[in-house]
Image (tube, rainbow, N blue to C red; front, top):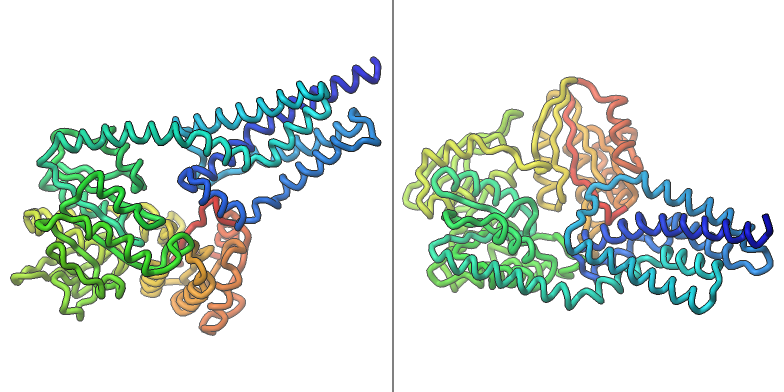
Length: 532
């Protein structure tokens, strides 16, 4: 076999390996774009702030690219270590597990195919210009190393196509709603609490009306459109629409489509400050729902938040609610709240001497607040008290939102892992503090998307952890310094009871090494894949 034959075989092998590596790399990049709502600017912000540009596989890819392009060493020699590096990176990538893996939707498939098309065209151009297997391998590996740019380019090229497709779906959803003039639409938004309130309201209203809600986290315009097109039926009487937002105008866009007659604002707080920039912008965006309501509609708003209580509403009748029994300005109040490991008992009082005693499996003031909003709406639209009482008693906790279970080994597990926030985390610690049968253990990576107040608010959370728990396990590096500083400054929790680990797997292993029957463990937040 001649040196030329060896070089040809080695080069082709390297090319095939690199092309194979391209597939999982592009899929991972696409997954991150999907988690950033397919928005280039959000993906770019994540990429530049997450150290993604200097990850170990990317650095190794640059080393392999350098090896391929060395002039003084024959390509057939350099290609071997380059191939070994790429195979190692590919194995490492294929072994990774993600909390929110890629969902290969029609849009994701279009972007993925376009990424491959761009890459193959660039590779073909390189071959036609150089007729060099060495340069062809270098170009393909460069495309893998610089994959975010291929991704952003593909998404940009497809923007007119996606806009046309989305407009078609938008018009279809609009026509479906127009064909159902008697459908009553209820919008729910808030910095937090909107998903739980949606589920609770759906459970109560379904006892008396044929009710549909947006499933899962379908709280964007496209998610609402998909719900209308795929789930809404002519016989539905009420449609509950969860409305999420990360920037000004997001709620208004949904309202312009569905035209709700009732709007619930559950919270205005310090959430998604990285994109909103200020709490005033959060308030303005959430109240886009209230501002869009017709004059004969109804706004139901949570007075427990200063940025809601202070907001004047003149365009529509208002019901204000609270989980604080001493707030006599709110029309609906939750009173006599008592927590037990089995759930909560409480009373809701309202206008015209309305009063209803309720029992629920739910825990936490935030859940009682969300239930109060749901009950207020149910009373307004005519659900009988006995049906409200029965529905509340049978509501199951929403997954990862202060849901509680017990293990065979005698541990009480409180799962509050979904999207923690300053208000909710404080309430979660208050719930934990009431479990006194054994040690109270917190496992948390802290809170995210809090902008310039990220460190400050996580230090505050550390203080709450110190006062409410006996043991803390801090996961990851993202908020480690702030959380441990907050715990230390409070001084209640002994230093030896504060543990730091890199992953949730390590936290679980540590927990199992000392947990005993009677202990209570709370999982407070779970960082998505877009955070370290």
